[in-house]
Image (cartoon, rainbow, N blue to C red; front, side):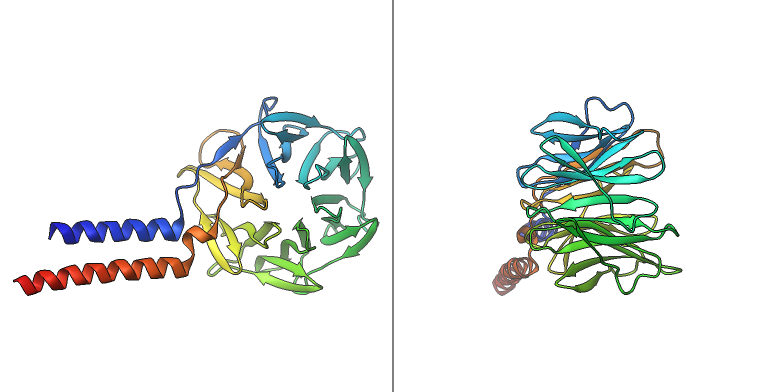
Length: 313
């Protein structure tokens, strides 16, 4: 009986570890100059992170924070994406509307979609310099776009009735983001080779795809009220547990190593927003086939031991 209980406990432990991976450690990212909030929006292959604090942007290179402030801003600069060459995109607040920017080696260039009557926001850039983002039209409806060498192409999800936003792009030109439907909710999407594919999760009307890496792994969040962070690899979801019962993690980007970045928001208590970065989140550790094979093997061992004990009695 003692052996059987121990074996069952071991089986459950192995199964849980394989299915959900090792406990995820959230490394907090706070700009040392921040007095209120720090948000992390993007990460590249070498681990450089970009985001914003208070009313400034930043780039974090191995723990060394450099403040980013577009010289044309009137109040705020936020960095949203960074490629492997260190080029950074984001937006700044102008005197009347928000403008997109590209920071290449410390030189800021304003990039606005010509249709962006009420503002342009840049959210991602790949190693070819292709930029994604969204703009607001005269009716304050968002439209996603891809900017290739200054040529803007609007990409509105055909299911959208209340706007589309592009939030990330990889080196293959695959774009992720969200679209909204009036009276229904928000869905994620991936756009590849001219085709939109909806990313939805069961039992929720709110799914957001916020980042994609070169392997096609997508990070995002789903759920209304109670949000759940996730990584999606080829349609298989790995959920990212919140750091505590009083905090909610919202991912915004994922690099080629599988590191996820985003923000941690306190719930029901005072406190500022913190940025975070995780260690690589690899589906291989929790591959369903591996789980099934190892679990089946351990079940067979358990049954064999029980059968032998029965024969002795």
